[in-house]
Amino acid sequence: MAGPGDRYVVGVDFGTLSGRALVVRVEDGAELGTAVHEYRHGVIESTLPDGTPLPPDWALQDPEDYRDVLRHAVPAAVAAAGIDPARVIGIATDFTACTVLPALADGTPLCEVPELRSRPHAWVKLWKHHAAQPHADRINALAHERREPWLHRYGGKISAEWQFAKGLQILDEDPEIYGRAARFVEAADWIVWQLCGVETRNICTAGYKGIRQDGHYPSRDFLAALDPGFADFVAKLDGPLLPLGARAGVLTAEAAAWTGLPEGIAVAAGNVDAHVTAAAARALAPGHLVAIMGTSTCHVVNGTELAEVPGMCGVVEGGLSPGAWGYEAGQSGVGDIFGWFVDHAAPAGVDSHERLAELAAAQPVGAHGLVALDWWNGNRSLLVNHDLSGLILGLTLATRPADVYRALLESTAYGTRMIIEAFVEAGVPIQELVVAGGLTANPLLMQIYSDVTNRPLSLIGSAQGPALGSAIHAAVAAGAYADVHAASAAMGRVDRDAYRPDPERARAYDALYAEYRSLHDHFGRGGNDVMSRLRAIRNAAVERPVAQIDTPLEVVA
Ligand SMILES: Nc1ncnc2c1ncn2[C@@H]1O[C@H](COP(=O)(O)OP(=O)(O)O)[C@@H](O)[C@H]1O
Ligand SMILES: O=C(CO)[C@H](O)[C@H](O)COP(=O)(O)O
Image (cartoon, rainbow, N blue to C red):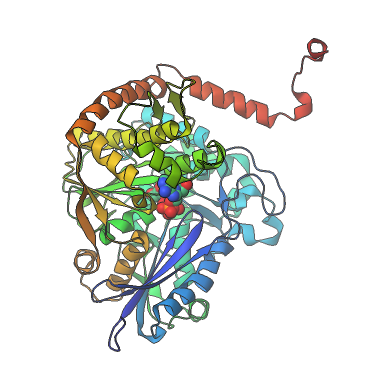
């Protein structure tokens, strides 16, 4: 219940398909009201809103959809909470990342410049835009050749999802758009710019999604060697860099009118949906790995020492919270893979998560005879290759939909186990596994993760982890707490050891995991590059107009 002397903060989580606002009491983190606003354009994958076609592997968004979240979800959350908006003292946001846009010097997205609306490269590139893989390959090859010192901070490879690959793709494919982009800005920072009218950059996206290490981006020399036109790319990225929980500015009159919140309240520095969740799960102490499981999974953990973990997304000082080395790894497809099966493969009658999970839960481990590789959306960690694709091995005439569904759930658990083992082997201790995100609602999935990793699983005590994490950062930015650690202790929630591994199932999974590992290495580490070849064949086929496909008409006749 809201009390008359209470103070509140608002956290806004910008996800892949929607934005959610949450009103939280500063003193104890109580969640008082929430609202979701679906993006009108969702993920723009096959054509721009005006019908301009997009090539394969593209994923764009419309920045106006983000402003609409401020206009709709924030006032609705405040109304649901039944509080007096005048008692809100701060707002903070978190975003998917690397979700990045080219903009004019004043922050206007290039896709909002009328003559540029039909140019695909003028739009926001969503984190899962995977068409920059050739550009990531070029960056990685040159960085290895030149032994660039920052490469090991990214597990030895920069991802096609990150800023430099996406920026280089723009330069390569639409140099005019590249030239018009005075700023190349993470949506995480752009939304803060919209709220407070001041352009800032946050240490988290600059480190993990840009390549900013030890105070520097890659050298001009390196960028010029990639492409002379790319030499000054960093000038588009640089800006006042803020630690997490810092105050970026105050709410402008315009943003106050959008949100219904008081003009002049604190606006926190930008942050990432995954990273901000660690504070909500009270998991900022070293060794508490948080897996934020939804469309994709991000794994974040603080460490006291700097270690190089092959295949991780990155390690950034202060990237998760000030005063520690924050590590990130991830799986690009998790809930999306289960969703694909339900929507496109499961027959009517068993085409719901609930029904498939119920049938799959009745099976002993291994009874389906299947093992799958969870690469439906490429592989972020440990292989960092978005040309990889999915595989299901062991199908027979006896295989039923629930068997495949279970194998897909398990495949993502094996992927997480690979990541945990990579951290531990590289000297980053993992003491606790905490799960957050929408997939915590699937008990079968949670038990499988506990059994496959042979670890107890703690669950975040909130269904709105990222939004609560943002609210915690808003409280710090507003000066209610000395730092993020203190705010997390007072406002975060975790249910410790909610799932425990069963020793027999864990043993059975060890055998299946060994099979997963060997398939993983075979298809992902050069044993057989068939997945890359299939991707190239597909790309050539879809890029060719149908009329040019060589149909052997005489044979058909
Ligand atoms: N009961 C379920 N079991 C497994 N996957 C699910 C279930 N319900 C939804 N999903 C999948 O989870 C994803 C949504 O997760 P969520 O955490 O809500 O979203 P986001 O990652 O965008 O924040 C979708 O990909 C959907 O297909
Ligand atoms: O890369 C990430 C964070 O670093 C996330 O995977 C990305 O932001 C998408 O998150 P979600 O699956 O929750 O929509």
